[in-house]
Structures are given as structure tokens and as C-alpha cells.
Image 1 (tube, one colour):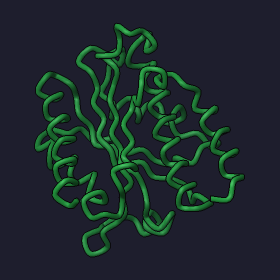
Image 2 (cartoon, rainbow, N blue to C red):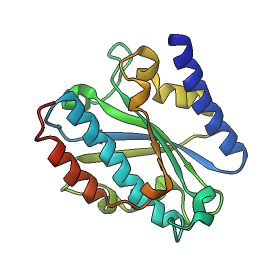
Image 3 (cartoon, one colour):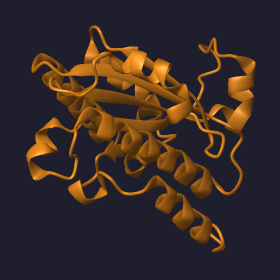
Image 4 (cartoon, rainbow, N blue to C red):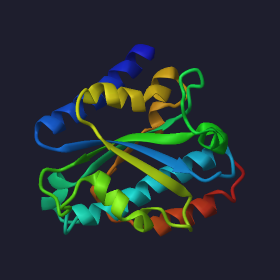
Length: 201
């Protein structure tokens, strides 16, 4: 199982490297959240919904008509995985470690060579904080850094919880999941979560 997990992580890294060689821009993402309540499943789902919301907000700023089948090859890609602090190595802010026991999301984003964005993803997020970090949602910080070299290593770093067994392969978030989900309303996802949280899991 450990060997298979390493193969999966390598496959993600190879895919990111291949896209970058084709002219896509790669970025390392870190999602940090307010304190989240509920079961472990509920916390995971809230983080997942935030990744989906960020993607749904971003995609229409990258391609004009994301529902068009012709645009599918040009849709941005986002790969996210739960992550936890490694205390013997961490230099994180103590507040970040205390919130949600340090749990957050790491991910890689790939932006297509042809995009409506006229700036890097790093600059876009920095310039539109109010668009992505909104008070009614739990995301409080989205750190975006360009992947300049060693994309496979960077992806492996973001997926270290998968390699250690603290996260499972099912917890990896791959966006877009399907063409039908490209422009689903993020609010609808949150309404669904509130309904699901009423069930004793």
C-alpha cells in the first residue's frame, strides 16, 4: 500500500511537470481556515467545499465560458490534499498550529497558457482578497507561490500526509471533478453540507 501511495504521488507530480513543460503555470497553494466545528468528516467536507468555492470563483476569470465543451482543455486544474504540521520541522505561526490542530489544505494549481487573467495567479489572489476570503465562509488565508522548479518534489511536499497515512487517497480533491461541476453554485454545496450535518455520522 505504501508503494502504491508513492506511485500515486509520483503520478500527480509527473502530471504537473508535464503540464508545465507544455506552457502551463504551476502554483503551490496553502489554504488556512478559521476554527471549524463538527466531526472529522464535517471538517474535511468544509475544507473540501472551500476548495470547490475557490475553484468556481476562479474558473470564470480564466475562461469566458467554462460550460463550453470547447473550453474543457483550457480549464485550470487544482489538486488539493489535507495536510498537518510536522512539529519537529515546522516553523509555522503558533496560531496556525492551534487552529483545527494545524490541519489545512495543500495543493497544486495549473493555469493554462491561454487565460483571461492578465497577471499571475499569485498577483490575482493578492489583488482580489475580498473576492476569495469572505466573512461568511471559513477560509481566512490562501497562500499562492509559483512553482519555479522541481515540480514533482513540490507536489510530494504538499501530499506528505498522504504518504504518511494521515490522509487517504479518497481525501485528494481534484478539480474540476467533471464538466457538470465546473460552475455549480458554491452556496448550493454549503446548503447540502448543513443538511448532511444534521445526520448523526
